[in-house]
Amino acid sequence: MTLSPVREAAATTERQSPHAAEALTAGSRHWWRTAAIYQIYVRSFADGNGDGVGDLAGVRARLGYLRDLGVDALWFTPWYRSPLADGGYDVEDYRAIHPDFGDLAEAEALIAEAAALGIRTIVDIVPNHVSNQHRWFREALASEPGSEARARFWFRDGLGPGGDLPPGNWPSSFSGSTWTRTTNPDGTPGQWYLHLFTPEQPDLNWDHPEVRQEHEDVLRFWFDRGVAGIRIDSAALVVKDPELPEISGEYPPGQHPNLDRDAVHDIYRSWRAIADSYTQRATIDDACLPGDRVLVGEVWLADLDRFALYLRPDEIHSAFNFDFMARPWSAGEFRAAIEETLAVYGAIGAPASWVLSNHDVTRPVTRFGREDSRFSFETKRFGTSVDLVVGAQRARAAAMLAAALPGTLYIYQGDELGLPEVEDIPLDRLQDPMHFRSGGVDPGRDGCRVPLPWTTDPETAGFSPTGTTARPWLPQPTDWAGRSVAAQQDDPDSTLSLYRRILALRREDAWQHSEFAWASAPDDVIAFRRGSLLHLTNCGSAALPLPDGTVLLASGPLTDDSLPANTSIWLAIPSD
Image 1 (cartoon, rainbow, N blue to C red):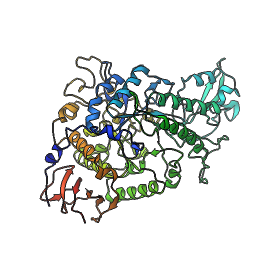
Image 2: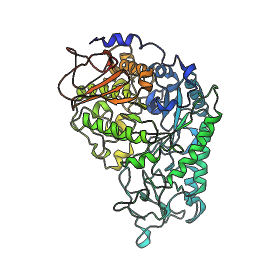
Image 3: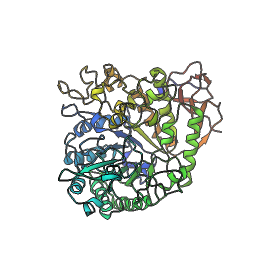
Image 4: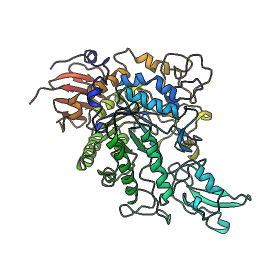
């Protein structure tokens, strides 16, 4: 076989603009089927004004970095006006930007500037609930029981003497009760309202026509401003059984009281019609690129047949593949997730999606370094041991694995730097409601939201401008300057350089359009072909002899013509 050093493979890809051919490809209607999409958690990406909080000015200043990384689109977690009781997923006003981040004019400028670089923008919509500071909820609290204002939410009288007991006992995604009692204007106890998440996030009643109309108007508002897609938070939760019955036992498909009810699909059909109407009249201008306006669903469902219903041709374009993300470091587990995913998506002609982490889950470097490397919200605890050296090797290998699979790739900010979960944040700096509502048992999600390191500046690692006196809103580890963009930029063996090469090679036709086919390999090795390319991931403990071929890229050093444990490789192989 011909062994080309990884550094030599990089030479032909590293400094080329990934969007050099954008003039030829921008008109592709189905850009989203093979896109590499980068998730931005604005508070933690880059601070442009020096107040210690990430903002849109910081993102705009780093658009060149994202272009050079090689991504096709940016997904922004909520950047709207919000009290930030749950990281912005408690939205107060969808038509206004949170003042810590900037303003609407700056958001419009960012969308246009990104588009000029060939990068599309996806924004987050949270249909299940709003903030308790939303004008609708303030109006509801000021109105009488049974009023139209309260009908937009789920208000109920309490049970027991004086209505002192909550109306139900539905489980919460954030621990604790899902019901909170209000106080009447005269100071007496009032009705209760439903919230599947925090009390600051009252659930909306999607049987109310104004709720449906308002969200359709919000979609149009952002499509009018050039966004290419909408990510739908908690997409399967929005419709409730109006009787709000207790949850017990098994339910026929589509009949669970608050999850994946059949009526939810009517909502997304109407949203799809809106998105398609913008696709049909899209043209190249300063604010947007041509092609489909897409809907991306956050759909947490174990039943893959039910999951597939959301991806029918007249509903959501794409949905996150959480099964793959939650699997432990195991060839058998990954193989099962890949097989099931491709079968389900392929049956309905939808593209698969591949994601290793996001703003809610433990970063791969840490997760894959644990003895139990699967992800589960229920098992997150303080003090779980981790081997970060092994975790980093596996995270690099997993990045190559995910990128080689057919479909859409999602990258969470900082994973391209190989950042680990920060697990020693002082308790008085933690902000995530998952931590507090668990009684302090769950460390929460702040550990994957720590501000990014950009330079070797010892104060803020370049997250904020030089000379800034404000400290980052979450503390950065003292060694993060060594993990920064500046520290990795010119190191051909760094994780950042690896990601740049991954994304550059992934844009080539061989990865974009070749059919997927499993290749024979030992049980602890994942092997598949994409046309003339071969991917191998060694999840075992022993090195694997390499087949004939030319090495295009490897996630780590190769030894003696073999693939070490915890390593992935891409090979160009001889044609049959």
